[in-house]
Image (cartoon, rainbow, N blue to C red; front, side, top):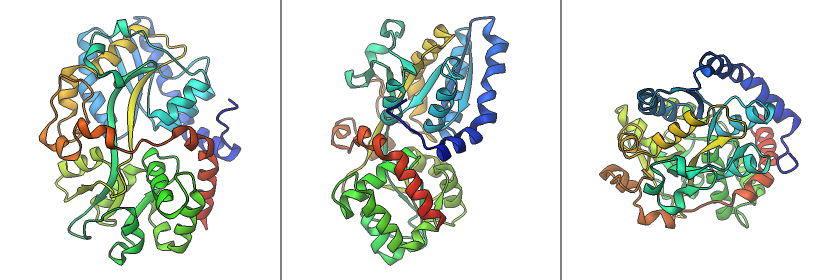
Length: 350
């Protein structure tokens, strides 16, 4: 684990926060392990959890498999499997490149056998990862309420235009969405994407921004619904969810570029239910499932090339535009992330 050192305080916090939930999959696994037809799949909480449970669980059930959706953010998924590498609580993980790199370095996931996925050839080669298929690309930017604030041009507006004062919310560096935004802000106010000293200085100069720091994007969406905030960093799917609830929410591509991250399903090292895990993985990249997942309220960008983009998704990004998005250097982020987390937590705590 020399490539990813979690601070004692950070690791202790993660362990305390996930201890109860790490116990949950085991009885579920034990209850159905005798049939050999069960998979425990880690999935992001909120929109992802609901969508995957509603769309993929019925598909696997028809194939004779049980699927347990276990919600956890990617950083928490890592903490859980690091705590029990010999007996992983999940058969599959859902991660972006930053966490995937760490999982590979620590031998926590395994290369897949593409021949076991009948939908493999329906993915563009760029979505055919050796450690698992890309199920969507999360495009990130800025969500805002046009009833409360003007349309921001980009990140600079949020700090320099008084129209946004006290109405912007942020999350910490454990969030992929947040850390991608911060690397872009570091380019604007600092010497490059890793110059977080410039970002921390910016927050110190604008203490009203620190008052809007909360623990998660889901928390931000609740505050947005309640009208307590008008702006937060998000993915297009977050805005789609808010719109499905009848809220006036719009998405902005920052003028400096939109950070993006492919999201892959990975097979854990030591998975005891390979047949069910591969069935789940294959269902997630199937034309039928991705056609459902690109509809509101999720509006996930489909990676199956037989799935046509909806007008709503095309309004956010087209297949041709994918290559123009900003893809962060996750190796650089991983090298510094734990230190950034500590510094930002200290800054927020005052």
